[in-house]
Structures are given as structure tokens and as C-alpha cells.
Image (cartoon, rainbow, N blue to C red; front, side, top):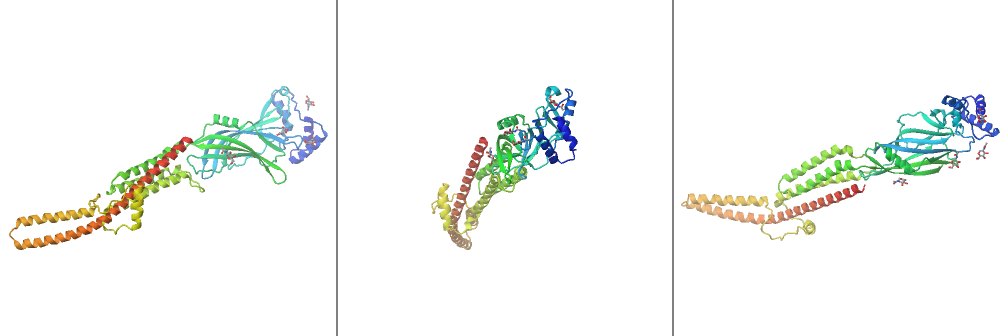
Length: 479
Ligand SMILES: *[C@@H]1O[C@H](CO)[C@@H](O)[C@H](O)[C@H]1NC(C)=O
Ligand SMILES: *[C@@H]1O[C@H](CO)[C@@H](O)[C@H](O)[C@H]1NC(C)=O
Ligand SMILES: *[C@@H]1O[C@H](CO)[C@@H](O)[C@H](O)[C@H]1NC(C)=O
Ligand SMILES: *[C@@H]1O[C@H](CO)[C@@H](O)[C@H](O)[C@H]1NC(C)=O
């Protein structure tokens, strides 16, 4: 048959279009009843084998089948050598794979004994190579170029090369950092239809998965947990079919870094904020303390911002969590300011409005187990600064009376003056006391309102922290 090839070579120099070569080739085949081409070597060594293969190399531009209606079967396999990472912003998965392809070149066949070897490596460009590409490919392959393929004596070609795959993948980062991503790698021939190029996989997916797990060196923060395959056949428009082999690579993020660096410090800060409710609200310390905490938290978020994923479409749950932490801190600071205000200045406030009294004192008060006090209680538990002032004033007044009486006993006029002054003072004192009693009634109620809100927020805090802690631990343990 090689002599036929020689004839072909003489008739059509290489300049001729492949389709024309094919046409002539087929027409020659019609007349020559022959099923395969046998290469004969003059000596059993590689140079003579290469010599014998020369006619085949000149046919590298056409699909290597004797009959054009016979499809070429291409087996595809790969080993996932490394998961380089995931770019949430660009929505791409970066992997490094070793891709294998195997198909039969029907123009080649030699006797291993006659030619001295059963396989030979030759530059890939000397033979026809199927145009199998990965559909999701986004960038140029930057893996080292491998120029050789294996050619076996029965005509099979094994082509293997590394690919640095930057593949587009729809990422779902809602559950970050406990997310699992499912990305596809679709192998298909860019041009050939199913009728001329059929694909299947080399080995089972389980083998690919196990092999990948064995050889994988770089996984970064990702762990390969699964691999599935689907063979998809799509209509190509003109009654033909496109075939595609789609692998689904499932990877899971290792969450430890994020839990340790982001979530736990956040929970610590909010716990400290929780404990600051034990500080007395009367003093300024509590609000200062909370303010410092908020400042610290803001700085923490700024530093850790690089760890958070950035995409446009969905807001990850962790951002909501961090935002909620900040919101709780803010609201606790605001509440502290209000409480301090109520404790210091409520004596001058108008009485508590009815709706507020019902809502806060009656309903919320029962909820947080701070029942409303009886209204005619004399002793206030909380010393109103206004009350203290009045007491000091009255004490000073009583003290200033004594030495004057001691010093000048016989000065009647002065005595009378003093007595009337004393009466006046008494009257003023009574009036002030009355006013102050009314005032203390309202201020007491306001203070009660303040305390109820304080305790309510404290409860909310405990609830939020325990729920988020428990949820986090459950998810962490499960993943
Ligand atoms: C190659 O060998 C086969 C069988 O050994 C023979 O039929 C054929 O003619 C030989 N071809 C050439 C070109 O010598
Ligand atoms: C090519 O294959 C088709 C279908 O398999 C067959 O009908 C046809 O005869 C074949 N042609 C040759 C030259 O073998
Ligand atoms: C290709 O595979 C199909 C089945 O998938 C089979 O029928 C056919 O014979 C194969 N062709 C070759 C050239 O091996
Ligand atoms: C990945 O997605 C594909 C298609 O959406 C689905 O068939 C496959 O089961 C998914 N794999 C996993 C592990 O969820």
C-alpha cells in the first residue's frame, strides 16, 4: 500500500488542498481493495521506521480514516494535578491538568519485529491531531509546551500534554467560607460533528478521581471532593449532532483560615461588647468602652477585608453576619447614650407617654422580667442626681443656720430675721420637695424604661451570639 502512497505523493504535491488530496485518495481507494496501509522497514531500527513513515506524515492534514464516513474515535482522559484557586471576581476556576487523548490513525501500521520497536515518539505536528478543546477555556494555555506524541505499531496515537486551565465557572459564594463549588470542564471538538468524531472517556471517572487525589500536590484552600461526567449530544442545526463530554469538578473550600481569622475574632469582640452590659450605665465609662470596641472592630474589618470575596451578584452570608455584628455594637452604643441621658436628665422630662408606658413598661417589662414598680414608692433605688443636689442644698442650709444662732444669741432682730428666713426656706423646701417628688416619679419611670431597653438589648445580644456560634460550629463540623 505504501507504493500507492508514493503514487499519491507524485500526483499531488503538498501544496494541494487537503480536501483535494482526500478526494483523490478516496477515489484511489475505490479502485484499490485494501483495508490498511502496511509500512515496511528495511532494517529493524528507528531511522528506517521513520523513513517508512514518511508517506504517512505527508497526510497529516486529513482525518486518518480510509473511508470518510468512518468516524474517528477519540478517547479522552485527564488527571487533575492541581487546583490553583478560584477567582470570585472574574468567576473562574484555575486548575492544572494532564490531558490524554488516544485515537487510531488508520494510515499507520507496521510490524514491530520487522521495524525493531512497537512504538515511536514523533513530533505531534507530523500527524493529524483532533481539535478537542475545553469549552470553558478563558485564557491561553500557559503550561509548558510538549511537542511529542506516541505512535504505536497498530496505528494508535497517544497524545498527552499539560494544560493550565482557566475555566469560567458560575461561582456561588453565598455560604462563604463553607462553600462547595461545582465547575464544569467540557471537552469537545470545536468543528467536527458526532458523525465524524466520536468521543468517549479513557477510564472511569472514579479512576480519574482517585488518580487525581493521589497525584495532587497543590490544592491551596480547595479540596477536591467529587468528579462526575456527562456525555451531552446537542443538535448542531443541520440535522447533525455535536458531542461533548462534560466533567463536573466539585471542590470545597477549607474554611479553617476564615473561621480562625474572621469569625472567631468577630465573635470575641461581640462577646466583649456583651459583657460591657455589666458595667454600670450611670458612668461615662460604658459608652467610652463601647466606642473603643467599635473603633477596634472597624479597624479589624479593614485589615481583614482582603479575605472577603468580592463579587457583584450575591452578598455572601458572612458579610451579613459582620454587618449585623457592627449593627449590634452600634445599637448598644446608642442605647448606652440614651440610658445615660435618661439617668442624668430625666428629672426635667415630661411624663412618659401612655403608649410608651404600655408598650415598654407593661409588655416589654414583663418580657425581660423587670415588672413595673408600684407608683407611690418613696425610696428611689437609683439616686437621681437632681435629688442629690437638693439634699446637699438642704444640708448646707441647715448647717448655716446653726453657727449664727450660737454666735449671737441676744440679737433679737437678727434672730427674727433668721427665723422668718428659716420659714421661707422651709416653704421653699417644701415646694421644691413636692416638685421634685413629681419629677422623681416621672424620672423613675423614664429610668425604668431605660433599664428595660437595656435588658432587652442584652437578651437580643445573647440570642444572636448563641445562635451564630451554634450555627457556625454545626456548619464547620459538617463540612
Ligand atoms: C510490505 O510488506 C507486505 C507484506 O509483508 C507486502 O505485501 C508489501 O508489498 C510490502 N510493501 C512494500 C512497499 O514493500
Ligand atoms: C465506507 O463506509 C460506508 C458505510 O460504512 C460503506 O457503505 C462504503 O461502502 C464504504 N466505502 C468504502 C470505499 O469502503
Ligand atoms: C468507534 O466506536 C464505535 C462505538 O462507539 C464503534 O462502533 C466503532 O467501530 C468505532 N470505530 C473505530 C474505528 O474503532
Ligand atoms: C454539578 O452540577 C451538575 C449540573 O448542574 C449536576 O448534574 C451535578 O450533579 C453537580 N454535582 C454536584 C456534586 O453537585
